[in-house]
Amino acid sequence: MKPLPRPLAGVFFDLDGTLADSARDLHDALSALCHERDIPVPPFERVRETVSRGARAVLRCAFGDDEALVDAVLPRFLELYVETGMVNTHAFAGVDALLENLEARRVPWGVVSNKAAALVALVLEKLGYDSRAAAVVGGDSLPQRKPDPAPVRHACALAGVEPAGCVFVGDDPRDILAGHAAGLYTVAAGWGYLDGADPHDWRPDAVSADAAQLSAMLDGA
Image (cartoon, rainbow, N blue to C red; front, side, top):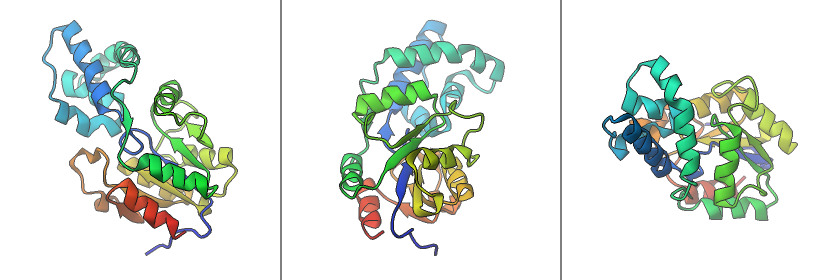
């Protein structure tokens, strides 16, 4: 098994389903859109499982696989999402303590998300993390998005750390693919949305059941 990098140079996270539980606000935005369109609202649990795959995956829960329609309603969905004020978005249990532990050790941390950078900024502000992250990369920060490794490498460069000394944590196979390809140690966030999958199947370097377990794991690095 690949060992954790020692000393630990940095830790980077996916956002939705890894640091932030944002599913309720996304479902509320989808519900509002469905009411505008006079179509049935998909169940929350069905939507929650898709959140890590992005806004279009959330919209397909209501609009099916008509990609032209999904693209057409996407701007209004994002407007409605912003209008929620992210009032129901919160950090997953143990995440605050995990980040505080990293900061106490002076280990920089950052965020690499496929969500638009402006929306990432809103979520981080809501969580109180906006001034603390050493690097923030959104889905439109570069031409490439995860699973391409470029955003992860870019985050490492922004934080001033070498990828080989870092860890990438996420709850979607794209996170593991991007982290591996960028040369980081990868951890699957077993507490995330997962979309019904077994994260061991993604072949990460480790799987963590919760943020507290991850914090303990990183304490040894």
